[in-house]
Image 1 (tube, helix red, strand yellow):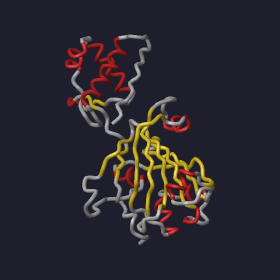
Image 2 (cartoon, one colour; image 1 turned 135 degrees about the horizontal axis):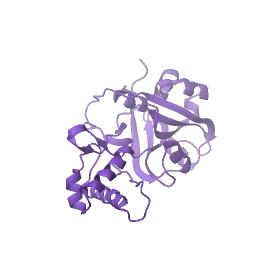
Image 3 (tube, helix red, strand yellow; image 1 turned 120 degrees about the horizontal axis):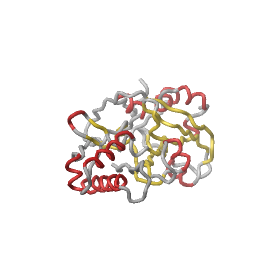
Image 4 (cartoon, one colour; image 1 turned 90 degrees about the horizontal axis):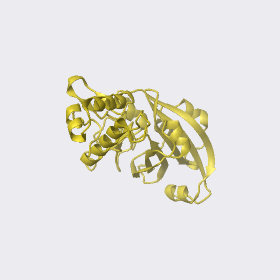
Length: 266
């Protein structure tokens, strides 16, 4: 996981609190700590860093208050679990609303824009279209318990969704469900690429990130059961609220609590 970029509330250059934040972040990177891992105790950190235990405690309190760390009673202080763990699979498609719901959270979405556009060379290649072919572009802010965690832009071949309008997407809790029920589309396999990139200014603002901050970027082409591209997706994910996880049995029979989107509508 990307370790949070701790920002000290004490802005004096070289202050003891800022030094603790930096040393703790480096320790997490060096030891490969991830979501759910317990950090060393105040005493251990004070001895390791050569800083007073009181200063370490104050620095940890700041990080807990900022949501970068969480205390679990007498168990210790931990890196918090992400709000959303997104499964990655080349052969099983999942709807993000289901991922959030299955984790016990309330999914939500805000439609940012909906338009018909012409596919540029990159989009056309991804969707197996001629450059300039019409596509539907849908951009949404995805929420978990009303907290933004990703901004997603979907590109759909226009000929696959005749008559689709913004009001349809606005009213639909799941885009995949809407497309399957209304247009008979299926979502079976996918190619994807995940990287850490600088978030565009608009996406950073929507996710509550500082300008120039890094985010988890996923680019994915989703194919229907006949191998035809059904969607090209660009997803910008908040690095502290989202983690990506590969499915353990990605080559065996589909065993999932999620809807089988590769099957036609029931």
